[in-house]
Length: 294
Image (cartoon, rainbow, N blue to C red):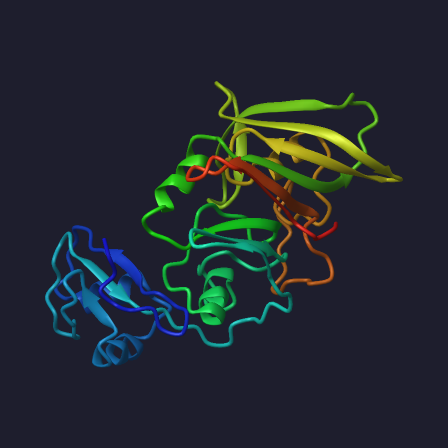
């Protein structure tokens, strides 16, 4: 569905489908769905024409609730933390944009990040409204990210990732493991854990696979090269942790260790070093490599 609101200052509208429920007005639903957003804030957004339905019709504080409708609105954040690292362009043509992403920078807006995200930064710099990420990296992970610039060819590039036709290589710093002979392949069944943003391994048919080898032994830590066959959320982080060699500075695996603010001096030691694939439009081999080091 095409959003009926334009991109403003690099930020596109968010959307929310309306489920079945007891609410009389859309404002009643928004108050319950987003308790951290004041009623006056929603009323102000509506007065400015920044809350509309899927047809583009402006909504107000008295607009009746309609199950199955889709509403669009702009998020607003106050006091957003600045990420003091800069992304680099590796390649651009009429179809794709390839970026070398720094640690700590989210790819797309979510949670407490809006303007300090890779997508919004790029839109602001280049006026690239059709920009859409073809795949994702965790906020804590640095490295190569591909974006689509052309809606007509987007599906061709997205299908490469969906059909596992992209070769991805990661580098990671983690403790040495002298009792294990490398290279090694980790296969396991992964599913959502607790809290919801963590993953866990369970018994059953494997749905994840990572090939791991040693690049360089560096005293108490080792530089590993990883080639994920599948693309599960947190796959590399979980697989290394399960082997007994969790990533340096990992705040999620094997145990959670959250701080109220990011420690920019201690990034997660995980880098999406390169991606390569056969271009679906030209048949040429494409290879893009991050210039960053761990």
